[in-house]
Amino acid sequence: MTSAYDDNNIFAKILRGEIPSHRIYEDQYTVAFMDVMPQAPGHVLVVPKAPSRNILDADPTTLTQAITVVQKVANAVKDVFDADGVFIAQFNEPAAGQTVFHLHFHVIPRHEGTALRP
Ligand code: 5GP
Image (cartoon, rainbow, N blue to C red; front, side, top):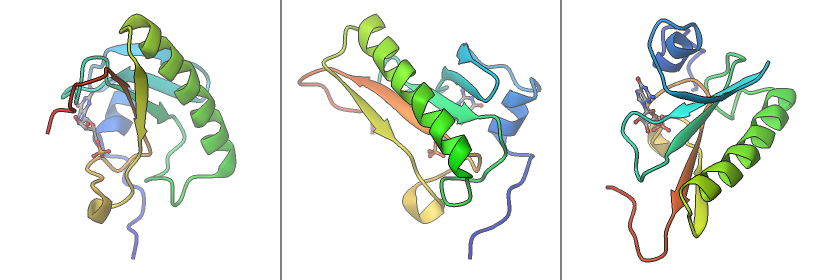
């Protein structure tokens, strides 16, 4: 069974300004900031402001707004990091690798011939 949303999660604290972050984008619905442990240079997290635990309990409007920002950020990091491609990832529940329980999307610029950090 999926747990309920808990607003003590780290991203909720970042959204409230209780924990610092390096924000690269913000609008009414969404924030994007640098991942503190990047899998590759330019690893950004796109985080909707609305409280949902992951994609499983998010409302469709939140998802639509978030994916639009994911696209903007993907194009920006591709340009800024002169990348060959962009990896987008999103995990739901511990069994799938989720560690922070506020919906977020990983946006990671990729270069030919390089590996993601393990
Ligand atoms: P998940 O596995 O839940 O999809 O990924 C959570 C991500 O959040 C990880 O890539 C991790 O490095 C990142 N993260 C965890 N704590 C913090 C933090 O305090 N600040 C930032 N900017 N990123 C964090």
